[in-house]
Amino acid sequence: MVVSERRTRDAHAQYPHDAPRASWRRIWDYGRPHWKALLVGGLLSFLGGMTGILQPLVAKVVIEALGAGESLVRPLLVLTAAVIGGALISAAGAFVLERTGQSVVLAVRRQLVSRLLRLRVAEVDRLKPGDLVSRLTADTTLLRTVATSGISDAVTSSVLLVAGIVLMAVMDPVLFGVTAVVVVVAAITMVAVLPRIGRATEASQAALGEMGSQLERVFGAFRTIKASSAETVEARRLDASARRAWTKGVAQAGWSAVAGVTAWLSTNVAFLVVLGFGGARVASGALEVSSLIAFLLLLFYLMEPISTLVSAATDLQSGLAAVRRIDEVGALEGEDTDASEPHRAAGAETLDGHADAGVTTPAGKVAGTRHNGVHRTPVPGARQPARVSFADVVFRYADGLPLVHHGVTFEAAGAGLTALVGPSGAGKTTVFSLLERFYDATGGSVSVDGVDVRDWPLAGLRGAIGYVEQDAPVLDGTLRDNLVLAAPDATDTDVEEVVGRARLSELVGRLPDGIDSAVGHRGTTLSGGERQRVAIARALLRRPRLLLLDEATSQLDAANEAALKEVMLDAARDTNVMVVAHRLSTVTSADRIVVLDAGVVRAVGTHEQLVASDDLYRDLAASQLLTAS
Image 1 (spheres, rainbow, N blue to C red):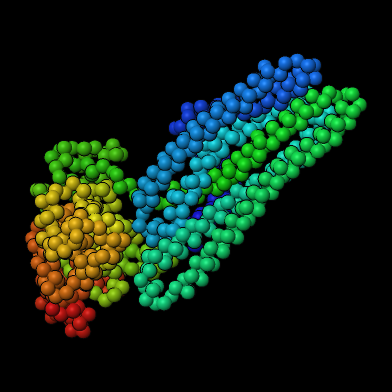
Image 2 (cartoon, rainbow, N blue to C red; image 1 turned 90 degrees about the vertical axis):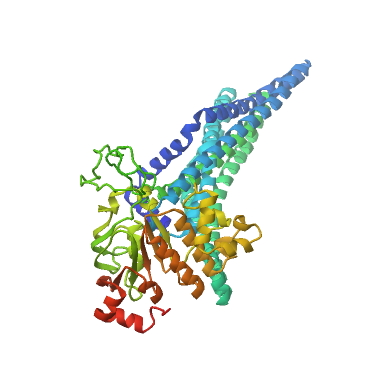
């Protein structure tokens, strides 16, 4: 189920009265940094509107002057100035508000992007990326109107409407009374309709997000869909999503149309009633013709603020729905990836091997202790290989799912190559996910350098680790962009060196622009083996103290596999290298092998020791589940 559906329903169930108030507070929070610009834009719009409300009064003066045979030059000049001046002032106000609205959207999008990129992996794994993209694009666009011109238009139109009503009451109380009855009926209708617009808008935006998720799903496996001749099936799925979005959009449009026609109908009915009653009063001599014309002009003028008020109310409802969807992202669990380095005594090193001059913790704890008061072990020497320890680790990916680890215990200390082997589903890749803190252990302890990974700042922890995923993703951009992704300060010499180590020199020489050549969306211009070597080079460029390779040689031919094996062994001389291995050539070179089976460690040793002592390992090698070199 999409997060918007579940969280929105829960929020309304738990806080049915506070949710609208909280949404209004959030809108104020978004607009508050720009209050000066909003005030200026609102005042300009108000002044432009006031020049309009004076026009019926000036027209009355013109008609009376015409009847008295007086000169019309002065009244007409005043009327012309009011029309032109009001238009210019209103245009200036609209520009200021629209510019401010774009600034509000920019700020919200920046915050939302920062939040999305810092979500925990577990949250992203269970969500639909297309829906999150919809919140960043469509929902923030809706917010632009409500945070600026929507509120300003609502306030300005309300003031102008009240001013017009007061003038009507002064000009003729009888005609005003007739008009008021019609306006009150329309207002009651609007109060009933507006909440429905808000709910319909939220449902429509959620449907659009679902459609975006379906489209992202298709393009995420586009070649597979083509190869499977599944275009028709996926087209039906997308068509169903589009129809759901259409249905929700039609519902929103229907309620918006009801609001619009109510405003239009009430104004026109009021005009007809005033024309009838006013004509009768003019015929009886109780009302002057100029006063009736001015009253009708004023009524016509009030059509705009009434229409604007209805439109603003509709936009506000849409904006409130957008705010709720945006704030749902804020309720997702995120990571503090910008935390400072762990506290150590002056001169001790941080997790990535750089000297620390004795910083203090974000929580203000004493140097040399971790958050819960347990002493941090300083890292001796420069860039020492990290020490990894799993102690009785229990883990499941979510409540209700089966355990992946049932008490995993092993150590990989100091430099060297540690191979994780075992049947599919044994929990090998999960070991890396726990080390990177993509997930937290359900029980037990995962430690680096004797400190639980949950007590390390994420920036420091991940800064010490180089990680090559199983599918070796390559991002859209140039080859250089991909290589320096984890090491943006790397020099050209560093890049050239790692290109050679990862056996990418031939690829760089073949590309039209060398290392600055574009590699296409998800690296489509590269082969599987090339993408894997790019991922390995990216990890090596970071100069990690702990290098994690998840089946790093799975897509390499024999020659490149041998070359990468040399790279791994070279890195293992001064780095703790851990690899999920399926090839015997990798395993036989390992300093230690950890055999995992059904979420437990059943044996640890060298290749020769395990062949002699462990039946599962012997069977894995013999059955070629570990490919022989």
